[in-house]
Length: 274
Length: 320
Ligand SMILES: Cc1ncc(C[n+]2csc(CCOP(=O)(O)OP(=O)(O)O)c2C)c(N)n1
Image 1 (spheres, rainbow over the protein chains, first blue to last red):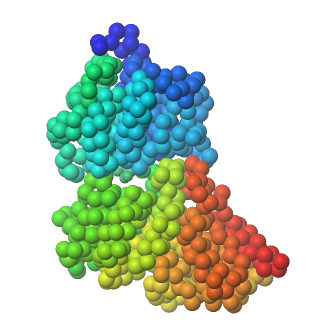
Image 2: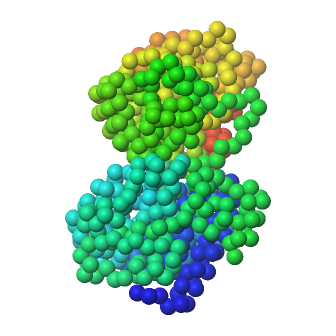
Image 3: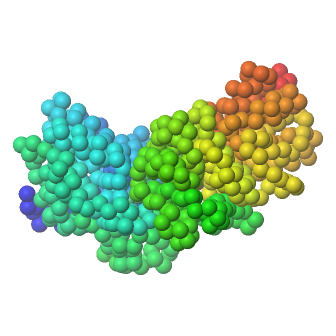
């Protein structure tokens, strides 16, 4: 579905706020994973401000669409999205990773409304999302389930176990999104294990596959908002992204996986993020 | 992963001792290889990779594969040091550690990095406080938690020479060198850090220096506190534990780990059967809140004040 211009404007505005907010959290905590926050933020903004059906006042509403953040290290992206969506007040953001904070370095569903499951160890989200989708299939519920993994994260075998089951069970209510920024913690995915062709792999596992520019909000909206009814198979969206997207000195730099900004870098980033 | 803070003066990051020793050994013995899960940097293996590019095997973010590959490399006559954040190395790959390494008895060296609560703010998924409890029952894995840089280097040397599975539980938390004259590393043997007769504190890893400091502070108050460095958790030095129970009548255990099933558990299991004495276990009660490593140590009594309080408490229990 092609989005209305005002929908894209809203998503763009929210994504900008999320980048500024996530980087402020990381700067204050002097901890975090800003590179992977920034590659994922346009995807999260599109989901929360264009696609997902939810009511932030009722995080346990049975018919809500589910979003599972499998790349749980990118809490700058997830918490800024949940805050923008109204799940918790802005005053929480300054507590990121402080002693006893709800906003732990990795998301905990027992403390943060809107978090569907605890992640942090990579390769957990897709199996849990598969279970959520099977529950929906069993009960005939019409909610959709989305899960976002990193591309390095796809090296975990648990993803392929989930893929086999999701494809076999034709979980059309399930959408896997892969943040294909081509960098993992230490280096490029290409020189670690080589992962291409991802699209053919997922097709072979019984998925419909779409490859999109993960920073093209219209394209993301288009592919993610399509009704799954009658598709007869799960959807895999390979979102080609740039790690550190939006800040010149962070883009495509492996070290910004978990590097944190000093005051000058923070000021520079705030100048660029307008 | 969490940010590496500056190291205080006089304190050492034991990971330097780990890689310097490994690189020196690898230069002499081409069978030595390293296996990692996208953890070259956090394992400080960048230098090793430069020197021996073919001998650093990065399998990607795939810990079960990593440990299985380690077992296979051992089968092929290599001496693999499988190095990863200890939470994932032991937790994610537990069955591989059990079946492929311990039960199959392959000559694999598992090196758990940033153990305990080194990744404090990253939360319970990234804490490795259950590893002792998980690995102790896998009887033929030697489990060693070195207390300082010297002991780290000795443990790496011993592991390379030893035929059989080893788990080295390393930390990146800076610790001072223990000041003990004439030290010799003997796996499976407790090291006497302070002699004493009123009570014994048994510690391992990052907490040994705190136990020594607490003993010194309590000595000023007239208490004679024995301190044992129990670097080898498995097999336990039963003789030293039972001697402590008989001779001092009360024990405090201290570990950067869960109070269930680790060093404290091992000591309590043994003493309850052979020589029941009051045992106070210091460590973490279960999943702990978010917070820095330093904050978590203070909060859960892994401090001079906390150890001193546990000593007083166990002595109260003796009186009752
Ligand atoms: C099971 C497990 N192994 C290792 C890690 C450490 N780790 C955290 S993020 C990361 C790299 C992730 O790369 P990718 O999935 O590509 O994420 P992105 O680039 O989008 O941040 C690694 C290795 C982890 N969190 N979980």
